[in-house]
Length: 334
Image 1 (cartoon, helix red, strand yellow):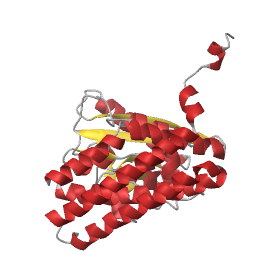
Image 2 (tube, rainbow, N blue to C red):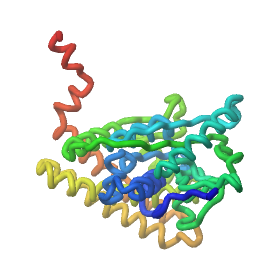
Image 3 (cartoon, one colour):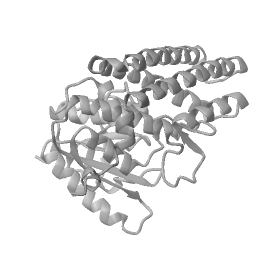
């Protein structure tokens, strides 16, 4: 039999592309059974908020892919190997050859691969291969349920000239309360990180608090990429819903976080208003002055609320935030 596939792989579009793809891999493997919003929050993807100065579509995917995704998967206790590079590197053919063999071995063991989709610049999944035809079987959330063939020789070759894949291995059991604490700390980190990826001198994209300012400025000037604005705002509408759902769960474990949940409920409601505003004109994909004014007012209110939520999270985790990088053996002189 030349074709080997992993059953029950379903990449569905109801979160960010990383979470949708990772959830499909882990649930098919039978090692994750919680809600998808929880996976998004615990990996930190729900807290990423990145905006280009002109709100171009790539804003939502702007991150250090190799580093950020590796850490995201490790946060939930999974061993993973991440590989990333550029097709114009002279060593690319060697990495491509190695990737083909590593991907096939992982599928033979029953685990699909997290990768870049052959059809979009977002994340996707490789869940099978056929040696006779020399193709991988892929899925992504934009072509839900559709098998996307990818020739071995075309692996890593995209318009963006960047290739990426992650092999996911065994996992360790994580303490639920510790996971919640780490996710809250990560939320603060994402909020206070000014620029999303190396080099930090690239200031066309901003993250967290500063990303809000980029968004507000672009809307006020009415100088932005129209589809990008729709694409980014609709994506972040979903992220805000995930944050609210996450903090509801956290408040069940830590009663002092209930105030954060209440704030994020209000933020999620504001972003529902954003979604309603977008739906009213989505067919034309045209932003008029009235729409942009309405969006600015909503987003400015959301910014104030998120700042309050982050201040509260910092107060709840003050000791950990101040001491998390201390090596206690050094402190005690042991």
